[in-house]
Image (cartoon, rainbow, N blue to C red; front, side, top):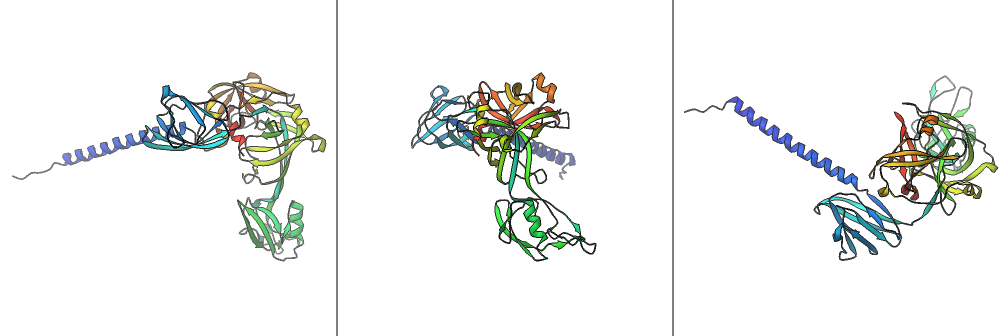
Length: 435
């Protein structure tokens, strides 16, 4: 007897295989999502303050060994215990209280359910310092280290042809440090060197990213007989922002983000920088799709200097205040609120709209413990009716406004959500302490 396999039987088996595969893929997707969620629930770096009890309450089914001596823990009804070899067993299924007696660094190797590797966490013990929130408007002037190339273009040559001698030599974002071994600090110096080259090849020392490189290029004459390289350059920048804090040594932190060049979007490499007293003279209200702005009047005069900028980093600008600036701060020293201590709910920011600093109400709507963008760890919403009426929300110039919650300094305002100016982002204060 002959047997014939019916087509619909083959199709049925194929359908079953597809369903099994889809089911397995769905399970894997859910598992991966849960794993990623738990991975994000524990920050890769946890800071704790020396000499104080710190409660870690991440509520994830993970545990691991904390390596280093001089650490004490309690919590989870005795589930945390001293491990052998100078390490400590930590279980994060519930609140854990950790204490370190001195500034140091530790490693915490976490596993899900005690079996599946989750992540390696850096535990940093920092000094239990207090900072004075400022909220003072500041005028910023920075001088670049060398001359920054912000664009490469063309010009009309002697015979009407288009020339661009720098096109395949320079890159946007390069800093010109030297020409023919002569230091270049200002645009004027660069223009003079090129203008008087007499058509000779020039040797340039550039900073490109983290590297110092040597290149050579020959300027060409334009239709007026002037030697040009076909590059657009900048040697300084100015702006308005807000000072975040002043520490006990008279050092300040401000902005909560770095000063980037407006054309290249790269962090500016500074030779020097200065803070000046600024008076807020106008407010452009923010609206959906259009960020607002605080307009400041800055008089670049020695008597108006508030301090020197020593560092421009992705986490803010930092430096030393004048004694007069330090004395003018209205608010008392506050303890730090680390990111694991921040809660969703009411908070305040300090800023100035032109007549002294004021405290305004905000709401913390999200805390991103593990965020690739260090300037967006806090998501907040302006709730104060007076601030909303005046600015529409967060506006340019408010960057650096200190964020206070529960009597602790927890961060600084950094960015506005362009599509909803009442909302914006902030950086954790602990990030601004390590720069």
